[in-house]
Length: 436
Image 1 (cartoon, rainbow, N blue to C red):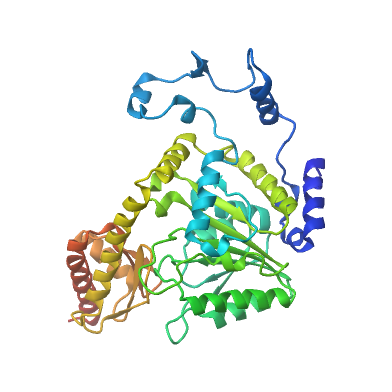
Image 2 (tube, helix red, strand yellow):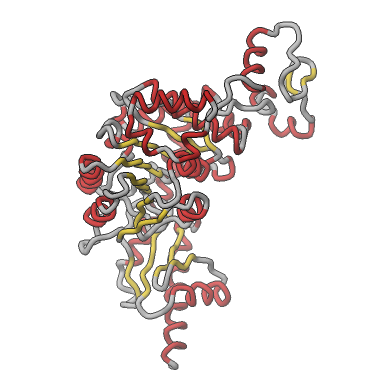
């Protein structure tokens, strides 16, 4: 094993043997090179005052070389903030600004010990880093049965982990903390589990209430006390889009310093929060009372980044940083939130109006981009294709009964037509099935 990797492992094991125990084989082997092109370039940047012939970019007239046809469209930005490589951990000013934003929006983090967010190529990349560092073949990854399909690809297909599902809702249509508890405690023999907590949930748009949140935290603590090392990952892709009386903070704040056997990891980003989907700017943040442990996890994370994408795109990091620091940022974000909330409320108003009879019910939703219908009289995939081919409307079929509708991308004035069309499509399919 490389001495740098061994040194990081020794630090992690010394600071928290439970965290060392949940590292995957790759997680133990990975490291960030301290002696190499990046480190030598950094040293030269600080000391080479005459000529710096280390970095793999081109310079002209003291700034990064660029094409005028590109710079003309980006004239509000200095070339140094666009064309140079961003550091593997991300633009330092952006990391600092995002950490401050996290604390402002999650007051429970104010006095907690957690690391500086590391920039990822959006949230999927952050989840992939978690999978690389902590998931080995056969490790349990615990998710609800209503989940984002990319989890299976990221943890199951790529890393060979076992996806363990539990029902998202209980009989009262609330978060099924008992199901989570059963799935988690079943891993006692393995002594390890990765728990993915995605709220607002994709595909249902559900966020637990404060009491349900406390129940989730209590379950994870119970598992830790039972001897299970838990990597508790909050996938906060849709953070902030809370429309009703749900939790309005990430569970990350309650998971920080919960128990020595619990490693809390926050995955979030500007993608959905700031409506910049194509920018691909996300973050991964670790929590621990040990600064040395946080540093070691950061170095291993940088090793994964260096070995895969090398570093994230610089321009989009600059754009997000400028947005966050703008005095108009909060007001503009509130404006978009209001639009999203009105769409969600209109959907709920339509579904509760009684106009659609008894051909479906809907899963509870109170946040995010989506909601899910549970069809009673027709197959979801058949309805999806009929909607697409006959009505020119796209939806997502999940299993036999569930149809996901992204109200986020439908203007409020068009929502009535959308659901009326879905209703007609279900009737069409149901009639054809019965031979009417």
